Image 1 (spheres, chains in turn red, blue):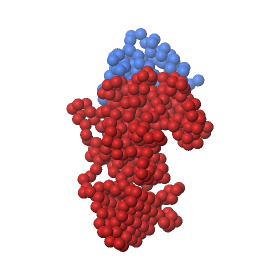
Image 2 (image 1 turned 135 degrees about the vertical axis):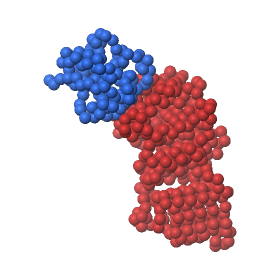
Image 3 (image 1 turned 90 degrees about the vertical axis):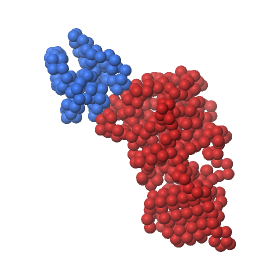
Image 4 (image 1 turned 120 degrees about the vertical axis):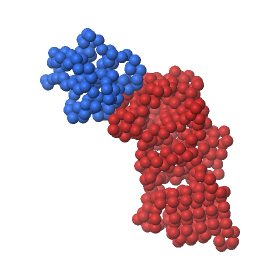
Length: 404
Length: 120
C-alpha cells in the first residue's frame, strides 16, 4: 500500500467535560500531559512515525490553544510534496450548525474527500495516549479485503461496560457490536477480557461516504462514529477487528482514553515509575511536541536546612528548584519551586510558582498560577473544596491563572 | 388523506411550470421556487414531503442547497433532477434519495416520486 493513498482524520472536537477544570480553557486534545506534551501529540506522533503525511485535524470547542500548538509545533511538512497537517474548524460549509458529532464533522467536510479521493481513510481520536504503528492496521485492512477495520483493545470484563464491545469470529471478522452493554461479551480466546473499540478505524473511501451521508439523513442519530456509524455496519459490511499492537512492546499493552481527573493523574504518575508502561525514551518511536526554548533545569541551595531536592520526578526545562523539595511529581517547563516548600504526588503545569514554605500534595496546578508563601493544598480536602475542584479520589485541581 | 407536498427548485421558468402541472395531475400539492436560497428559506418555514432539486442554478448550486436542506430537515427526501450525469461523482449528491437525468418523458420522475413517498 502506498501511504500517499491514505488520508488521516484526527477527530479533536472533544469537550472533555469530565476533565474539567483542565478543559475550562482548552479542548481535551490540548490538555498537557507528561510535562511537555499535549494529548494530541500522541496520535500525531504515531501518524508521523507510521509514515502518514496527509493529516486533517477536525476541531471545534475552545480550540485556540490546540490551533496554536499545532501551528507552532507541527508545522513540519512540505506542502510542495503533498504533505500537510491541516486544521479544520467547524466552518459552516454545510448549514449553520457546529459539528453535531464526529460523523457530522466528516460529513460537513465531505469536499475534502471529494478533492483528494484517497483509497483509505484512517480515523483517529485526538484525545488518547498510546503508541501504535498504523501501518499494521492498514495492512490488515488490505489483507482482509475489509470495508472497515476497527482497532480493538482487551480490557478486564468488569470494565468493558463503559465502552463499545465487539465480538470477533476466528478470522477477526466483527460479528457483534454493542455500545456500553450491561453484559459485555467475553473474548472467545480469553473469558476474563472483552474486546473494546479504541475509536481507531480504517475505512474504504466509498463505504465511509455512504455511511456518513446515510447517517447525516437519520433524524434519530447522534452522528457519532462509535454510537451510530459502526453499529449500522455490523452484519451488512465487511468489518474486521484488528487486535492492537503496542509499540511500547511490554507485557501489558498501554492505551489510555483519559476520561477523568483521577485517570489523568494516574496516567501521569505512571510515568514517574521506574519502568513505566509508556516508554517515552524509545528512539525508534519518538513522541514529539512543541517546546519553548528554556535553559536546562537548575537546582540551587545545598545547605542542611535550605536544600533543593528532586526525587522520583520528571522536571522539564526552564524549571528552577530553589531550595524546595519535589517528590514523585511532574513539572512542566518554567516552574519555580521556592525555598522550604514541598511538592509531593503532584502535577504542575507551565509557569507555576510555588511560594516559600508552601506544601502541595496530590494536586494538579494548571498554567500561570502563583501559589503564595505558606499555602497548603491537598492536606485538608474540606478546605480545598471551598476553593478548588476535588476529584472522587481526592485529587485537587487549581485552575489556570487562579488568583489568591 | 391530505395531499403530499412537493417543493420544486428549478431556475428554468418553463421547466418549473411543466413539472408543477404534471405532478399536480398526480394529485400532489406542488410549490415552486427558482433558487437555492429561497428553497432553504421555504423549508425552514413550511413542511414538505419531498424536494425536487436542479443542480445548475444561479447563486447557490443544487449541491450546496442539498447540504443546507439536510442540516435543516435531516430526513426530508430529495430527488436530484439534472441534465448532467457527471455531478453524481460529487459525494454530497449521494445524500439524495435519487439522482435522475432530465428527459422529456416525465414518467420516470413521477414514478420515483411515488415510490419514495410510498416508502416514507
